[in-house]
Amino acid sequence: MGKIAAAPGMTEYRVVLVQPESHGVLALRSAGSYRLPCVRIPSICRPAQQLQKAIQAMWGVRAFILDTCAKSDCTSCCAVAELLSPRISSDLEEVSLDQIMSSDLTSDERCECELRLDSESTSPMARLGWIDEALSWVVSATGQRIQTKNEIEQMNGRGAFTLVRFQTEGGDYWLKATGEPNAHELPVTASLSGMCGEYLPEFVDSRPEWNAWLMSGQAAAISELPSEPLGLFNLLNDAIESMAELQMRTVGREQDLLEAGAFDQSLQALAAHSGEMFAFVEEAMILQTSTRAHRIEKSRLREITEIFETICERLEVLDLPNTVVHGDMNPGNILTKSGQCKFIDWSEAYVGNPLITFEHLLLFNQGTPSGYRESNAHKLKERYKAKMSKICDPHAIDECLLYSPVLAAYSALYGRGGWLSTPIRNDPRRQAYVRNLARNIDLAARDPQLLDALGVSVRA
Image (tube, rainbow, N blue to C red):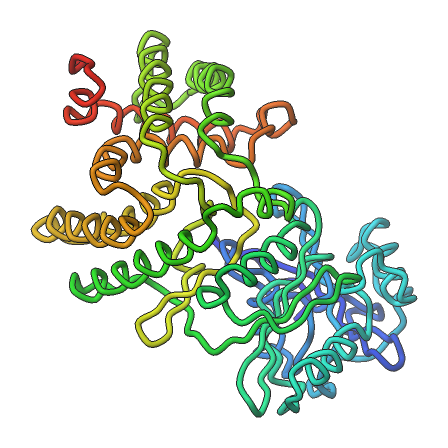
């Protein structure tokens, strides 16, 4: 029961299951030697969450994932886990780490395991015993008793990055910790909680030495978008109203958000880098090998650059205020409670035009059947305009809505800014992502209403 061939779409992990008291490792006897137990989990998933479930299903024990490591091609993966419950499976024997076959652990992996056994990990969350410290913090900060240690649900666990749900007598709480390059998420979340805490989970407490914070988990996460048109419309209506209210409360607080760690996506910043950004798009298009998607030619990219820069100039005149922009707007980052939405995961927090996030939310409407799509989009735009008209000229919002599809796609392309000067630019996955976004910009820049507003002739 040692090695298991990984099926397509599945990844095999060798698991170092550590007894926290003795620091022994649970292993399988194999021909007089000891091998690590292995589990398979879906390749596209949260590894810590799926590993925790797989270990319990296969070996009957609860474990907390301290860290995972994998080669870039996922051919060899390893996880280190601390046992939370007594050993049940008779197939597993407790041995010392040096009794594990050399073929089951690379020298680097063995060294990392030894550091964790000696509580010398560079990340506090990857140390044996950290979960007990976390439990004590939750009890102290919330005044609630943890129901059982075995009910700890782990969503993420890799070095400095941790996301854990604790069940208490008074409800659920989430502990999140981040490291580089997302260490700014704690100060950004704390800052937003002070400005518009009604639209984020309750910020309970923080531990700067872990770069971690506690949140109330009383709102429900969206596992998937509703398939029924009315249900999807109602969800998007709630999300758009809540986001508008959240954004309005950040008006005038741009500097506070930037100092907390949000990224600058003001019109000035976006326009200043448009030349080099579209030059990279041209480079990425040249490197395209697939013939299934069309390649945007150099002449068209020059036209798109001019259109985008003109849009920035017009938006400057319309003068919508800068607000916070959620740069990772997916269903998993929206929570619902009593018709109001709360938003999580602010590592991609930008300061820029508020319509960027509105357009990203409106993309969910693409899943609506064609008979409802256009009508729902119109109603959602009117609802957002009604909210934002409290602080903006409604006629200015109408014109901005013509430009926002191009702006929103460019926002996703630009991201945090600065990545063009890093090795990320050479990653084929980044280049494919850029080509896809560029096609979205190209499509949005062909809209006749947009071109008419800009005074530009419709191009073929």
